[in-house]
Amino acid sequence: MEQRLKWEREARKAREQLAERLGRTPEERKLLSTPYYIDHLLDNVLFSHELTQMPMSTLPPKAREVLTKAQEKMVGMDPRELLDASVKVNHPGNWSSPGGPQISKSAKRPLIIGPGINVITSLLKDHDPKRRLVLMDINPNTAGMLKRFIDHYGIKNVEVVQGDIRKIPVKNVDYIQVSMVLHETPEKDRAQVMRELESSLSPPGKEKRGRIHIIDKTSHAPCEHEEKYSAVNTEDLKRQIKQAGLKITKRRADGHRIYITARRKGR
Ligand SMILES: C[S@@+](CC[C@H](N)C(=O)[O-])C[C@H]1O[C@@H](n2cnc3c(N)ncnc32)[C@H](O)[C@@H]1O
Image 1 (tube, rainbow, N blue to C red):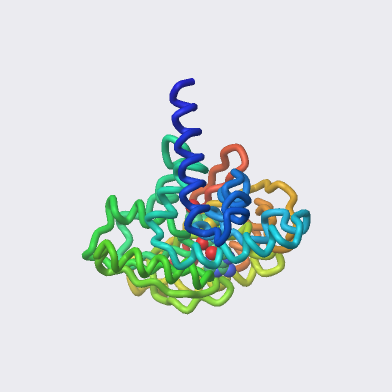
Image 2: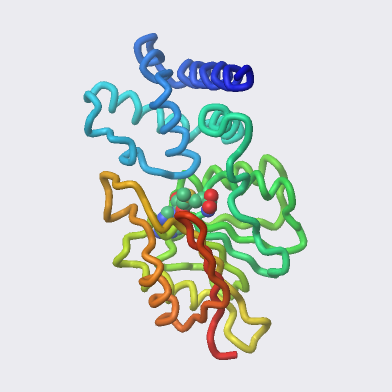
């Protein structure tokens, strides 16, 4: 109980500090320090959820304007500060998924698609500077923040690319992680995504054939942009993977998530 009160105090303080930085007038600061708003803005910026995920249409125009301006400002802030605030308001006491899923240790040329910002926490913990890691995210803000973070901490041999999973500009990799990205990719594009993933792996026979590691949601609360955020249908995904010339080598599901490992066919 005491612990919970402490977290609540910390969350309130973190919100107020951010509101202080982001609001231009006392009214704006008061509005911004409302729990719901700052919490969502942090998620939007750090994890690239779009502002539209918050039911903005229900907000009065003034609030919408203030929140949009605040989000633009947040993008220019030190990501460490935002991560710190995010832990306090959204993940009190700990980070629920520190750094996202583990990055394969055996891969020589790994590619992480849609890493979000929190991948930095795992890179700080155990990135091997002897191998080249590529991080690719569609969101230019995320890509920019990742670059700044990497420079700031002097993390070696990590390249950040802004790119779309529907047209992957990075080729010849031997491991691709796609965690919590497919549900943000329209259903109609997922077959194309599987073909792109397949073509980014090293050609069979060249080296050990690569693998793709997919994690995603099999259920998703309804939201305003259903076309853009929709849960993965396991059967459809399995079919799309196979049609792209990949073979599923491992599969498991727990609760609302599915975990799939797929390899290139042909060897
Ligand atoms: C929910 S976050 C997942 C973060 C992390 N991978 C994890 O598992 O915790 C989704 C990420 O995918 C990125 N993303 C969404 N659509 C994408 C696309 N078409 N191509 C590349 N990245 C995309 C978003 O910008 C965001 O950084």
